[in-house]
Amino acid sequence: MIPVIEYQNRRASFFSKMKDHSAAILFSGVAKKCSADENYPFEVNRNFFYLTGINQEDSILLLIKSDGEEREYLLISPFDPVKEKWYGKRLTTQEATQYSGIRNVLLNSALSSRVESVITGSYSDFPAIHTIYLDLEKEQKVAEDTDIEDYKRSLGVLAANLEVVDAYPLIVAQRMVKSENEVNELRVAIEATKVGIASAMAKIRPGVYEYEVADEFHRVINDCSGYQGTAFPTILASGVHATCLHYPTPFARIEPGNLVLMDLGSRHGFYCADVSRTVPADGVFTTLQRTIYSIVLGANKAVANFARPGRTIKELQSFTIEYLASECLTHRLIQDKEEIKNYYFHGVSHHIGLDTHDPGNRDLPLVAGNVISNEPGLYFKELGIGVRIEDDLLITEDGCEVLTKDIMKEVEDIEAFYKQRH
Image (tube, rainbow, N blue to C red; front, side, top):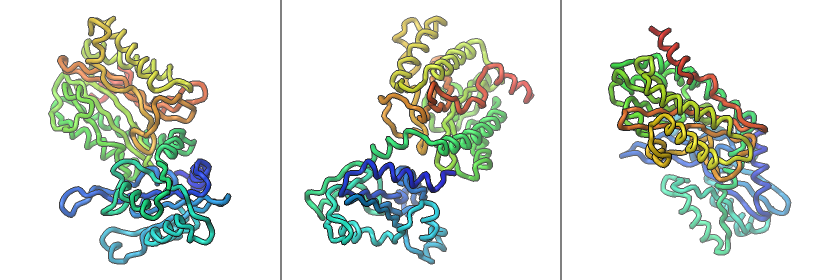
């Protein structure tokens, strides 16, 4: 669990990046419409959550920095007994303070007047604000009929010379470096993922449907995580389906001789595990499968040894391509290194955190505290073989720690697992 003081420190860090005579307005968001009178499940805006620890729609964070003073306000929905009968309990002002560490908690109906007074200077404590920070992430809904661009335009009506600055890159820059508490949240998510993968592997055999394996993973990780759910839609693909990176329809029956690719993860406190493993449906790799699998596993280990502060994700990608191309050429899987692009066509790494694909600049040198994926793969559609092995890496001062090292991936361990099952 992230302690309240960490949310306070995050806001203090963000305040330090704000100009004087400025304010920041950040929204938790609202659920988006799915169909008819149904909405998608609400997912809190991760930048808002990062600064507040509040997971409730229709909530707003207002930060004001002026004349050497910094003030913070949290605005939440009022108590509504009718809505609570339908949709459950809402936070009280006391609970909102307890979770966020923000003392000034107001009703969200006060936002318009408070923002207008801040911008125009009619708020007695501060002169007029010249700069407003908004999280301008595209398609962000801030109210039922309002998106962030609508809201930005409404502020322009209050003051024509108002400067609007995108807060998104400022917050994302903070999110890229994980604290010890954040890494611990990831460790909990990874442990649940480990247990779920073991149970899913035990389910795999010829004749079982892909979705049955995915369902087993979902059941187990929800038991482990207290029903916090998956980090992203599970990819469960057998045979030729495993050559589709984001295979969306796990309806096929697993056939004898198939490899089964699992790309999945649990989450804890919104922190996401992201793991891929590939196993043989029959419990034993064929010679060709073992060759391809061993090349990918070798790349996975080589990338982990290569990753360290100062290197970029772009450099990790170039390293991976060279490794896979050389090994495929050696084993006569390709005739020319340039052919590797036909069999490896995605990135080897991305940042991981409150989002599975945590936002971050992949051109920046890695620093201690970054958490990234390590996911080389090979996809030979004509052979019906797709292999991906993905670990989560914590960049340390002198290299990296493989956070997912206890989730089996060695050929001998996988085959021993299935032999023991029988």
